[in-house]
Amino acid sequence: MTDCIFCKIVAGDIPSARVYEDAGVVAFLDINPVNPGHTLVVPRVHVERLTDADESVVTAVAAAVGKCARAVMAATGAEGFNVLQNNGACAGQVVPHLHVHIIPRSASDGFRFGWRQGGYGEGELDAMRRRIAGRVS
Ligand code: 5GP
Ligand code: ZN
Image (cartoon, rainbow, N blue to C red; front, side):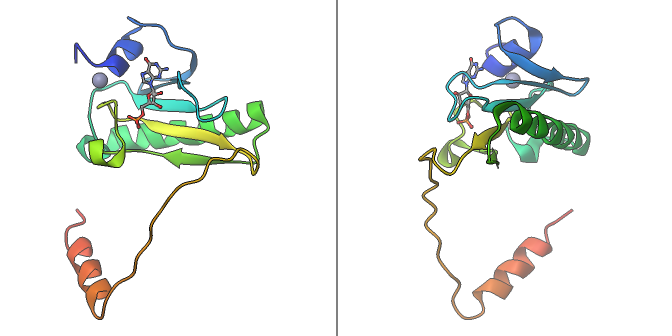
């Protein structure tokens, strides 16, 4: 896609700090890291959301996330890491090319997710379970 910043990074048309690449993906440092070593894994093919990607693309991305996460941990000495993948503007996706964040973490880094968690009313959990399970294909 011509005006996609991550397609341009994949093509080498704009620079990036690449840490890994293979036939399916490119991984590079996020330009505005949550913590140093924050890495993005992107498929070479342009798809916007995880749900737009073929299984082969998902598999390639997942394998690369595992490899890169081990490297990020070893290189940064982080205590842990988050794997984050935003889909849609409402979910925080700014760049509309599928990407997975690998964010090295430490207990003292001050970064906290603000999840607001709820619950289910009577019968709602099982109704939701059935609605989702019946659509997995
Ligand atoms: P999103 O919010 O879409 O999940 O995350 C997009 C990420 O891409 C952000 O963390 C942002 O810092 C990063 N980013 C945006 N433009 C560039 C760029 O040109 N180069 C690099 N290396 N990262 C970028
Ligand atoms: Zn793209």
